[in-house]
Image (cartoon, rainbow over all chains, first blue to last red; front, side, top):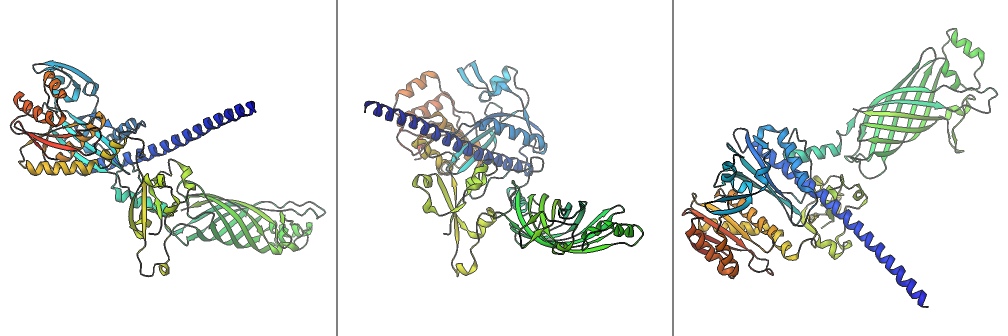
Length: 392
Length: 218
């Protein structure tokens, strides 16, 4: 009994440790999520700041400015400081029209000791510009840029001020920017900064795709099953198809699509083929994704026409050597087929896609040269195909 | 109200893909009390919510609206979780903009002269919060087109040693007089001091120092 109690206590202690580890992992996950969210919002606020400066530069000429201080929200220490600095430097470097020319001045941000008439003062360098000038560290006109981020509930607030590094330290620019809690954070192109409204419009346009009508171009291969019951094994050659047409989305979330295409297939001295194809696609999911591939299932129908010796395999019965010789002498054989298509398509943001499909050609049940890949009893699939899709 | 849209999590989907698996439009009753405390919510029309969160809000069929207004409660999680900061700091910082704006508005009303040079100092048991108070006040005053200096007024070490032994409420008046006597504040200078006088309080006190006279604003 005593051992059982000890065992129970030990196991509960281990369970408690596991629980703490799980809780710790959850907290870390939450912190990472919050940090990434805060970082996005901080970047958005910096974008908005520099966009404002592009419209109304704080200086009329390029002015040397020291990035004096970046403070992050109280209670949040996530390496945000370095990320903010990097993003701001990238923005200012790529947008020189704002006339804020960042300069390196480690002494400006260091703690300095200055003994003068007023006594001995320990302060940050930028707080005693007269001392820096006396020491010959700062010369000419310089300014100090301060960025202060604070979390006020669900909003991230950025307070920016630019101070002229002269003894009275006048603030020459100040602005408060707050992240919108009612819209997701956005990232804008650093080279081509736009307003938040324009960036949001671009985002929604990107999400909606390029409009309801697109032009697909498909390069595909169809293979046909050989018939093992035929005495002589005759393996049909694969047919390469190039198709083009139009695709229509029935809604902005691109859950339902329809397309119609015309195609051509050609092999030297073997065949020329034409195809008309229509398909209806259904997205697996509710709306197309910007970041992940979309998967569609589709069904459709085709009409295929072949002319040339390769079309002999689609004829009723078994092709003979006489048929082949006759086609060589000039009597061009032809075949016209109807097909039902079922398939699966993976596409990346309506730009690039890959489809696999199976086709049932009811007419081929009487063509002895063709077998089936999949036999479901009621329906047999005689052909398998794969396509690479491009949308324009 | 039709549903609850957790916007902060939505917007972070690029950084944390796992959240894509969550249901975005949920009923508020499904959230626990502690989960609700972490959210700040804003009501908006269904049209606005659809525009701002495309694909996340299912549009109500017109026949279900039948003349009523359908709105969406958009909720964002706090940037810093509510228990990550001491309660007093959280209370101060969550309304920092609002509180500081009220103080500066009142101060500018009392000293409307445009050539006045404003200096700001802040006192709080937490040095980090004191810096936040001072930065917010300076930025706000500068945005009100006032002449603001980033230089804090200084006193000799002996003055500071005496002031630190005095009750906080009285120390400000004495410090103001010393600033004037020592020339740290000129005749056109005004010092706006923000202070949390007691470690247990969450209100910001403010006062103005001009030509050696100290006046409490709140």
